[in-house]
Image (tube, rainbow, N blue to C red; front, side):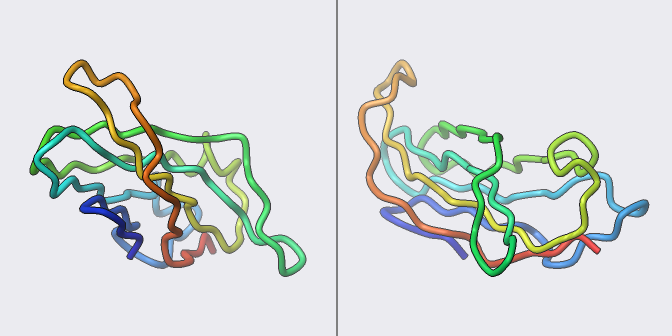
Length: 114
């Protein structure tokens, strides 16, 4: 699980099957008393190294809020089998959900599209 400063993000399951699963669902949560949340950046393992893919999703969450961020396998992963993870920038926001600063970066566990 990727967790830092009261913000967490983690895919809800490790294995996804092409043709059966339509989305990768990521549980996102803010345990702080201010607006914060994970900005998810998709990465794919290629030749043993992590490659950034051109996809991200900010999730500003109100205090104590938990939601799910869904990533379409066809749209976001191009229906490609492989090993993936999310780089998670933990972001802090003001009361109008305007970005204040990045608190740090963590990574989710690997997950697979088979």
